[in-house]
Image (tube, rainbow, N blue to C red):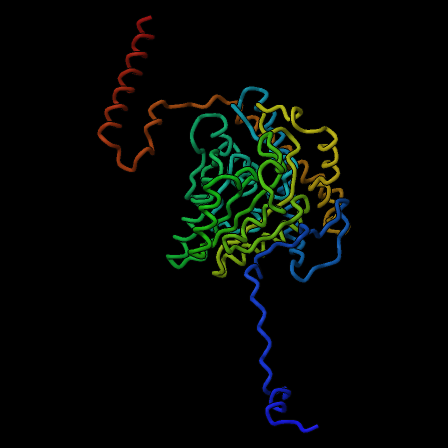
Length: 390
């Protein structure tokens, strides 16, 4: 059979049409692991090391343990103060110690933290005076500490509004050439709010150095996670905005610090925001005004006791020979002294000046505000004169 030149050309590999290149995966580098990152078993024994999330320095883990123990004692004391009428309300974060402390350990003192109402433990772990932290919950002032001094925004009661504030501050710092990172604590319920999506989207578009840290404690007050989202996990919410995300075992202190350290480095290096979801559990009710037994099974709560982050880290550090009985006792003693000092100072009746209501409303008081302040001043003086006459 005779072969034509055309047939030879058709059969030649050099003239074959190249294969169609694969379509780039738009989610590459954005998707979280399918399972939460974990470096310790629930019993505190280590898992095989990982290249993607190297273990933090043992000195940092020991300091994290100390702050977690002191933080748990603070949390218990604040809960007791609420029962004694010294606080109007208190949202406990017992069970979330690894997240509360890991968040502030992962950032610098010069970075900014944006807390929710549940981050009292995180604020004390950051070194803020506990009485100043509890001033808001006692009802004396909108914020008891100076945010600019401690680089910590006021605790935020409205859900998710701090997400927008964090994005704005981080962008402003970056615009001025500073390498400041903003860490925004978020509850799982806040991811259902519009401010969360607006903040993440703005941060992604303008590459603002923000770490959005979602503490998924399974309930938004009494609403379970299944009634909030159909996403595989909350970490997947970052993908739609082009934000890399990760999920982590929130009761594994080593993993929490490792994942947050990488997230902070990502943001600080100019790559934009990062979203971290920590799977954890609040052991107490939403606040002292909540009856969690109405919507939670006691067996569920008991199952989470076996994942206690404080005991988990203690076991690990003991096995590493960086923690012994004497050190554990010394830290426990420090925690008791911390609680005693807090108790004593909170039992003192604060001196409250009604005229302070008008402070810090505006940088320059408006004429109307000055008029209102003078009206209150006159009413107070009249009340004092009336008591004197009596």
